[in-house]
Length: 411
Image (cartoon, rainbow, N blue to C red):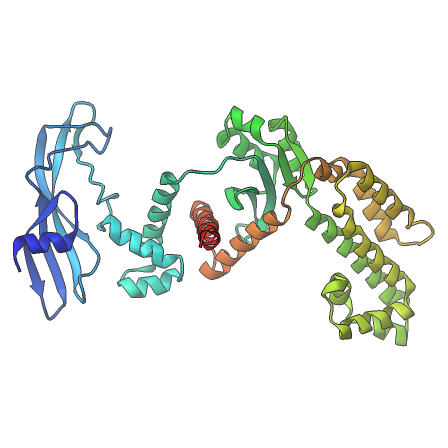
């Protein structure tokens, strides 16, 4: 095989293959690569300036993409430069983005493989250790994050995710318009969210945020009111309905212990039926609930109140939403349902955040969708110790799905 043929197969711009060795029994290929005669653009790896003074010539072995069945190791001839600013520094080579013994296109191949397979499976495929695959994937995601154009932050969501007994809870800040997570913070305190606003957002971005979809955790509200003067706090519908489900479950437990005999056996085992929406139940499940409602009026009233509360977010005008909420609270009179009365008091205490949904429409389901993607990554990877790595994986997952949907629409 001629020298120029090796260079064409290599495909490195500005470099040529001087010689190559093939170990047929071991199926290994080792080409020696050096700069072409016209490629004299030497850049300092420290400051990025052009440098002409060469201090030393050395060789570096890096693993490249396999050629057919041969595992390829490329020996590259590189320069150490005498930079006026940095002193003696190695030259910057785009094909070798890090100090690790791998080429850029090899790391890109490993990173793409990690998007659809676990790190252990990719390690077996490329003959690497699992920790090496994760390190390569992290560098691949960091380069992708630095090169892409990040969407503007107008509507944000703040929620928490439980990672386990050791790491416990993390605070998740997401971009509702882009449908991706922006930042992870350890803990649920006010200082946690303050750190995001202080170090990650500029004063211009503080004024640009229009709405924030949060749960009813008070430290999140205090931090947003302090750092985002023009932002409207909107309480998430999912968490409000979660409180409503908890109230229905409390009524069920109270009735279970109050009733006796055959009535208690009817109440037993109906928890998940009471927590489900009526429209999502099958005909058989609806019959079971109707049998329960025929024997226990309090459970029926609590369930109907929970179902009717869901219609609160169908209103587009602030006055109509407020009128419907007042009528819903009026239905609690003489019902003797203490858990539902506590729910009504909580809604009145957070009334402004509920009515803000009519003033500024946000996609509330995006917060739970982002959290669902993060939990899927945690299950797929069996946990992550590096929160930055988990954040980049979540952003890459959201971006690739968005690109796929855009491609489908264009097609």
